[in-house]
Image (cartoon, rainbow, N blue to C red):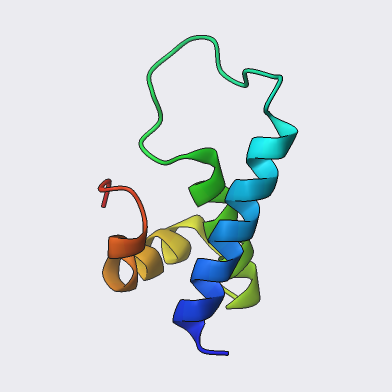
Amino acid sequence: MNIEYFIIETFSFIDDELKKITSQVKLRSRGYKPALADSEVISMEIIGEFMQIDTDKGLWTYFSTSWKHFFSQTF
């Protein structure tokens, strides 16, 4: 499996499951709308662990330089 397919599959699974889990619960009630969706952040963290990227900065750099077209326009 190539990394592009892995990213797509991981995000799709996380997004679907998170929608099921939070269908009856509103997670946020105040504050600014976050730049990334919860499913995007969780997916990035899981993929980062798989890729052995140990820091938030490393994870942000990896996704913002290589895969920004897959995620929100926040990079």
